[in-house]
Length: 253
Image (cartoon, rainbow, N blue to C red; front, side):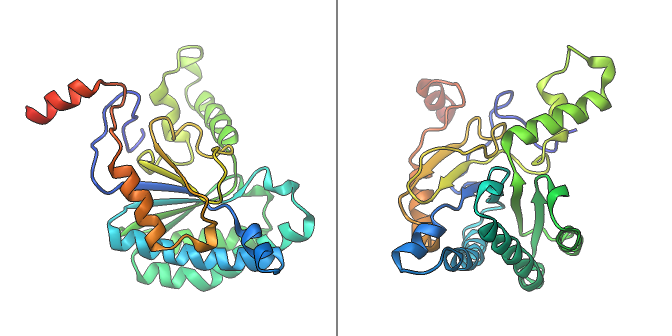
């Protein structure tokens, strides 16, 4: 059974601070190019910004942070860059998990991890186990992840679990098998770097999420930029299919 309700079946509680923020961290390569640096320098700087983003969420009361680190389509990049990204992932796990644990952050890694080196898979499992009891912030890293992959793997697992319901499955049947079953749907989706698309990220979960696109490149996305995104979110009217009049009536009830 899913731990959280679906925004297409129930109306979620809306708070001034988004409970769950999902981010596509775009623009590392362009940030480096602007400074006549190799692309990997941008990725290194981007990892540093993850640390700042975690701190910003802790300070502002965000409870869930999900970051798109490596998509299933990113394997199409030059082999040298892919290798460097994998090395950065290993280094980050080796260096940051102790700090995450000390600050009460629980780490999850979602995606098809079978393609990763066994050593990296072991580091991921160790990091998740070490931080499993933490409750201040749930940090999820999506690696070798794709929204369509997520839905398909969930469908296959659902079909295996409930064969007797074939052709009569309901939305709630699939939810426990989705990668993000442990978290509420994102309230706020941020994409840095100027692009305005979701790029196969959390396709199921973003049904009623508020979107914020910014031209700011990820290595420049500091706490001040994060506050701009939250301010934009606070100015939205989250109706979840209802009318504005219904919201007004409810507020006076």
